[in-house]
Length: 611
Ligand code: ADP
Ligand code: MG
Image (cartoon, rainbow, N blue to C red; front, side, top):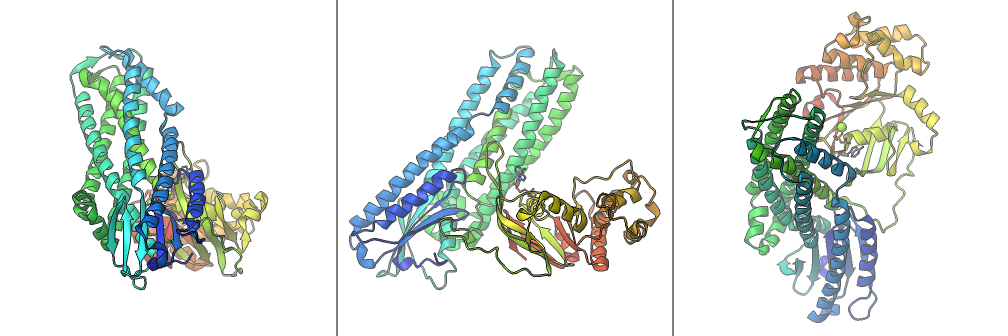
């Protein structure tokens, strides 16, 4: 399929694809293909159907004479609509199985119920209350999500004679002048329209979520600020219950961050899709309010940000309360306390379900136009000639994680190459896939699809032994989790990788020089854990470079440092890069980094979006 649809002659139907429903997506593609193949007047058509990152698209080139009558158009539209409804039903089923409670939730609800039972004036059967509350939440969430899926499709028709496109969104028809020459890609139009189409119920649901959570949090705050003294009969049960609450809070806050990111993306798409919004204004007042008026989106975003703060305060209160409870002197408002303990975890779980589902439904990425066609044969982009200057090359890396209730698309066809001796900075917000990418490039993790080449050799074709040999001798790591050994001196810590790789030739000289370069000459015999944060990080850098590797990967090496110290540490990377010709790939979400690097790439939603 060409990148530009020639809408003058085409029917196109697009919908946001549900990443959760991979099998369903495949079937749907096949059936769409079959449906559109029939053609309106018995003429065989050659439709193209495929899946992009955000949406599925089917299109067919008709002759204008094929559609003289409204009837044949209607019949195609009806068939498409029926097909889509079936797909929605299937998704609903899947959704239900996903939102079902899992074992660990059942377990934690049991603990909370037992805890409630153990304190005075307990409501009758708290376990039942929790189950009921949970059921109510699930029903509501399922209904809203289904509503969103139902809305997630669009039909495009184009008529040459009128010089105009007819765009059908949710059964309503809009006309739009569409100039294939000036519009960069019709696929982007699809993408943006679909997302905006989906944005309305999405934002409405989020608004409701915000209100509900705020109301509940108010109740909870009242519950924790009372003067009723309760006696803790079972401190273990109590500490477990509070542990569950704080764990849920952590998860809830994380979910809120995801939700905020998605809102920001919609705002971004909205900014780049002015024309599309004009079409959507046909939807009426409500969509204009939610989508066209940027203030609303930003307001929603900032309200969610405030909610994070509130929940963080709540975390502190809960910690405080838990401590008091264990010591046996807890003061609360009993009347609200019971319902708070029942409502809080369920509310937080709802947030998680929303966050997960928005990752499943679409990436909401304005970049998604450059997605992949799953039905077309994938070109072998991998059989390129090996360029001696390229140390490591990542080709079309895909990685999907499936934690219990959702699908996370960490990498979505990422490409990156690192050249000899270059200082490459990988920037991007948290969660954009930076760590996943460098783990794959360093051979620490395996991609679902795509290849990593080390000096032109596929990592996947190497034996484990070869790979770990390479890793030990040619690749250095400065990862957050690679701590220094407190039982060894600074010198010994730096020497460790050399000993492990049996590269002990002129070791003393190498290390002395390295420590000098890193400004650590006076600290060789010290306990590394007594050093400052910046100094420790320099020891770790020394350790990563001791074998004179070709490349060093550093994952957020300045994450725990203040900005001044961070800059200092980066300047040492720069120095080693210049002195030793080691290539550095430094991952950070710190913009400041850029002044040290030879080249900067930006990551977003699992893709490199620019240099
Ligand atoms: P970054 O380093 O840019 O912050 P990551 O590569 O760590 O991003 O993560 C990208 C996405 O993949 C995130 O949404 C993250 O939650 C998810 N992810 C990473 N590792 C796992 C894992 N082991 N299980 C589930 N999800 C994961
Ligand atoms: Mg990371």
